[in-house]
Image (tube, rainbow, N blue to C red; front, side, top):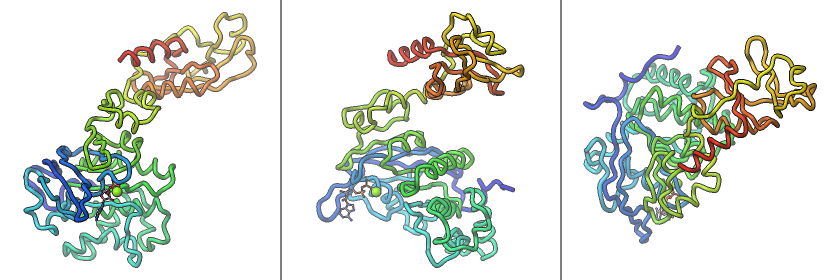
Length: 372
Ligand SMILES: Nc1ncnc2c1ncn2[C@@H]1O[C@H](COP(=O)(O)OP(=O)(O)O)[C@@H](O)[C@H]1O
Ligand SMILES: [Mg+2]
């Protein structure tokens, strides 16, 4: 059973459980003269995921660590709900800020349950309450409670990373800082960790600052994405859709890559796709003699069965589906490309066929997207 833990554990603030983070003309110059962050001004809004993305060395980690004062800014101010972090003593500050790093950074000689309970222990909770909380969190991040008694080396990289997230959430901090948390795990595990972060965030509404060098991860996770360039300068701050459609300059365009256009489609709905309803048949034999290049065989309960070509009606070809009006153009395009017909099958939320988007319909819709 999952219990709601929005309220209850950490210190409550007058504004509720989340906080806005403000960078106000922040510069960090290291003693050797390196300017890691240059005059950075931006806001990480309450309850949203703000992603810092950019190539290696562009100042992402430095920016993140100035929020919880692992590093102090040289110039400018960082504010948490309007309070300058420089005026808050670091232990108090960090109590309200969870921190997740690459390779989880777990204590190797502590059991999983005690790793997760680290902060509650530090806060002086009694052992039982802290461990109960840890057990609850293991479940929240999708780990089998049976892992609680193991040591970090007995877990896979992906599992360790989940423990890292659970540990950061232990005292229910309103702010979560995540520095390349998923960069060291393989792509499949990484995708599921990303999906679960999105799910978790839809329940928790933390103020999250997430650092990555991976633009796909940034676009997937970010409500807002800050693209940084080497020298610690902000190149663009925008929501993912705007970033893909209106990159601010050549650096951002280059960083987004050549498949920017395709990725944009995931933010465009499929409702505008013109559907044809005259291309479905109940049996492949009915295809014989048709002038259409492809017809869709549909079962008695209105599910798609296969595409057939009137020239080879005995050969059933694969189909791809999208939920019309709910899925994006990207999904519709994928559905079209999954089939030799080049057509996408539109279904409703129950999986029943509502029509067919032909190549012509896809072309029309894509041309409209290209026109803006
Ligand atoms: N302690 C330090 N002393 C001097 N330079 C540093 C230090 N830490 C980081 N840097 C430099 O600051 C720049 C930004 O580093 P960092 O914030 O780690 O970038 P990122 O996380 O984007 O890869 C880099 O040029 C890096 O070499
Ligand atoms: Mg870094």
